[in-house]
Image (cartoon, rainbow over all chains, first blue to last red; front, side, top):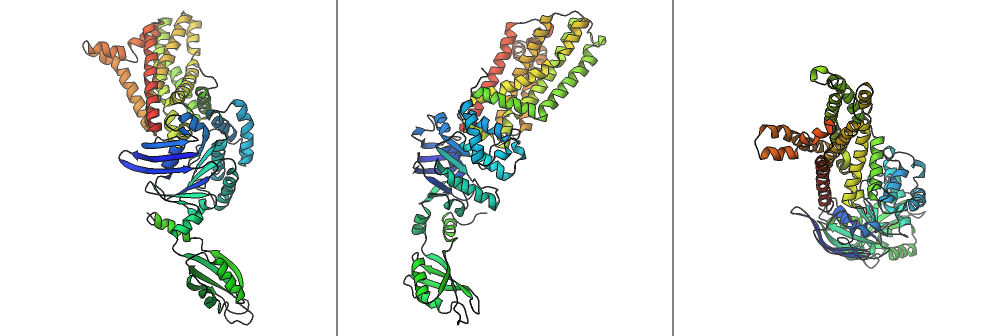
Length: 319
Length: 246
């Protein structure tokens, strides 16, 4: 669906992107991950045919963006970081306008716009000028304008930008439902934001792709150790919850470090251990604890570990 | 020309934007107010030499030409700069719309709105017609002149607004170019040939507008304003292309 070969983009003498090369298959959902200013938006604008690459070639659905820009634009839906809405237009008028300039007939627009309004759950505000909408609704209208012409490729630049936690969950749910109908490219600077919705991640730094793969592949490749957290409930006779569990975990082959992170005393207390191992040993640790007579009440991979690796990959936290 | 294509779609959107926004009404109100005040203060003032109905009408068109130019600058500066300012330009950039279609759609919408404002002053020539002796043709030619002058200044404004995302900068550039083109005429009267002939031929007012003031239609004047409009619309399109793909 998308093919990039040695694409670069310069602003004057400053290199903003590249050289980058990659392919994205039809139906894939791919996340571009990188800190602010590493070239994500430049890359997405080139793919949306709104910016010419300085060198290299870009093909969308087999069409070269420089030779057939209009054909490419008909096949692409693009949501920039700020939804491109006209404040003076009502939602309905705006979506109709977008449909028309994307090449749809008046009849197709009349049929499609109410569908999109229902889908994006903006039907209740369709007669309001977009300047009166909350950020959450504006972002939904932004998604609606990107899909109104039923593009094959959907590009979403920071789709959860400026949304509150509830709106972020709703947006993620909406993106998940779009996966069935579109090839989707999403950018973000927050790993959990896109690792939940994407099949594959491309990590950008300084305009270049420094790592790519699924979250599991990246974990396998990039993590030198795996961290899990396990919580056990203490027995009736134990003075301290999880006493003995630490030893049992340490005896599991592959475990390199065990540390008690929290523990409560008394009957029915709990203890949480942080375990480092050279592989994902959640099953082995759980089995050892259960066979040793401990009740395991929680077991999970440490969530932020891959994110820490991502930050390390892109040169640490920047000002 | 203004059909269901991209130009027509953009034309309708922009025209609705003028109708929905206070800016369009403010420009219309100021122009109509000043047209009326200036008509009363100058065109009807016999001390300024306007005694015949024809010269009263010419004086009205003279005043109206300056106001039309100012209104054209005011109406045009938002056309592209505002899209950049509010982030909607990317929608047009990533749509299957050609740059000349965007420029033409915006230009025609502004011209339609400006023409509507200009035509709202029609009561003044009608007052002269009822109370004096003037030819209908004089009125028609005068309004054609205002429309052509307005179109040329709108094209200059569109070029200026394509250059920047700041409407104030666009206003300064448009006002600057328009002022220079107005000043070419008085300058041409002060300097010697051959430069005087070049300045007079290029001046946006003066020789090219004189015929419209007195009800005389010269093809060369019509061609001049159309050519000027085309030149700046073409320049605006090239700027858009450069910025879209730049």
